Image 1 (spheres, protein in one colour):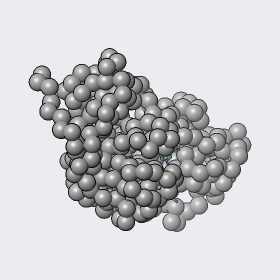
Image 2 (cartoon, helix red, strand yellow; image 1 turned 45 degrees about the vertical axis):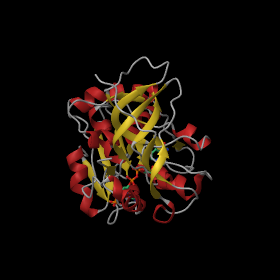
Image 3 (cartoon, rainbow, N blue to C red; image 1 turned 45 degrees about the horizontal axis):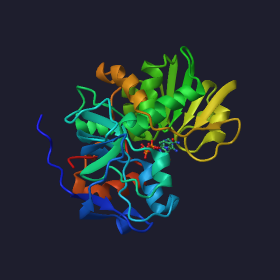
Length: 315
Ligand code: NDP
């Protein structure tokens, strides 16, 4: 195929000081297209998804020089670094930017831009039947869901309680626990209006946290997966030998903390589950938000009321 024309400047969202997205995030039209390292590909971003880490970082997780935020991406490979082996120009891919690298190196440019540079090992081929918007909503959340379930050792026939079942991560934990890990029973929490979604995703027991305390249920669970900083309460909801994993904050022992690692091979491993439709992306019904409304979309995600993933498309 013909080599894509790559401009030297691109549109991108940028912040130059820490603060709320609404105050500090600006759309610029003259940002340099990122240079490639030898193991990276340049991706023409078609869709990006937002994650709480985007606004947490912007609010001051790390003081930064001008930064393009954004981790999740789905797009098309337009240029290869000198040592790239597994992708070629024109490949449709999805993945997410290395979080640790981005926290340590302010030069790492994110995905809320027309182009992004990303290591080939962090990418996988976009599943065939998913749109770019659907694919963009998966990488960070599904890897967090999957790796977290592996870390806590959920095995076939065990029961699990998912705290925050309607969120970006929780909606995938429910589906993976049920369809990839063979959980015998999946319970999940949300507010009243989202209980039907939890059932559709495969939850056997749905708990309205505005009306019920899950730790008071007579039934106890083998595992709890906490996405809402409730490890104290989760410990009371598991069996005596039960395990609790939390992905937010410092949990109360013996609950264990977990942080995702960026890794395209996990996405590849999950492709069969995605192509068979056993595990589906959940996109927030208010979106996808066009690129020009990225600030509004981030402010919405900050409310902690989003359902599934907030996606930016088209870019
Ligand atoms: P979301 O913004 O997608 O979560 C929003 C959802 O959370 C809403 O649907 C809301 O449902 C639900 N929710 C909020 N409070 C509660 C509650 N008390 N009980 C049940 N549900 C609740 O966030 P993510 O899923 O993307 O991420 C969740 C957290 O995990 C974030 O803090 C994020 O930074 C962190 N994270 C950590 C990672 C790691 O590697 N450690 C990786 C990814 C995320 P409702 O409206 O019904 O309340």
